[in-house]
Image 1 (cartoon, rainbow, N blue to C red):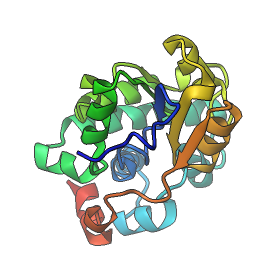
Image 2: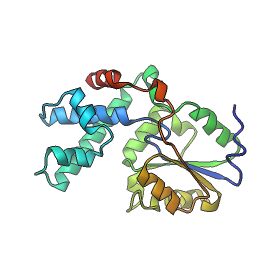
Image 3: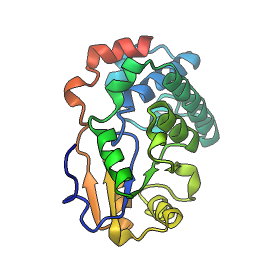
Image 4: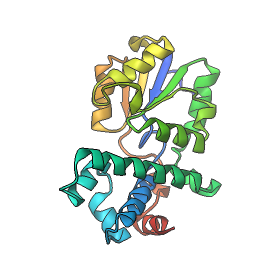
Length: 221
C-alpha cells in the first residue's frame, strides 16, 4: 500500500465529493436520463442523448427540451430520474461496478480508517442518491457519513455542505483535506477554509472507462 503520510501532514479529516471524484457515475446518470426521456415520449437515440447532454445538469436538459415546463414540473421529473438512477444502481452486477470505482479508492480509504482519520462524503446529489450510491459500491462500509444536498439550505458552490460535515465530525477546517472535481465543488471547498483542496481533473479510470460505443450499449440495456 502506498505511503500517504506526506499527503496527510497536519490532516485529521478528509472529505470527498462523490460524483466524478470517488465514483464515475456520469454513465449511470445518462442511463437514468435516457429512460426518463423515453417515459416522457421524447424520441431520442442513445447517440443523440450522449452527444447533446453528456455532462449537462438534469435541470438544464429538461428545460432545453421542454421550455414551457415550470420549475415544479421540472423538479418532479428530476425526482423520477433519481428513482431511475437508483434502479440502475441496483441492477449493476459486480463486474459493472469495477468500471465506475476510482482505482485505489479502497486502499486509500482503509489507510485513512486505520490511521483514525475522520471521513465523510459531501455531495450535491439528493440524499437518497448518495445513500444508494455509497451502498452500491460498498463505500458506506468504510465511510459512515454521507451527506446530500438536503442537509443544508444552500448547496455547492456555497461552503455550507462542507461546513456542516465539519460540524458533525467536530473537525477543524485547518486540519481538513477535501477532494473535489467540479468548479462549483471547488468553490465550495475553498470557501470552507480547508487546509488542502485537491482537484480531481479527470476520472482516474480513464483508460478503462466506458467509451462512446460502450456507453450507447449501456444506455440500451
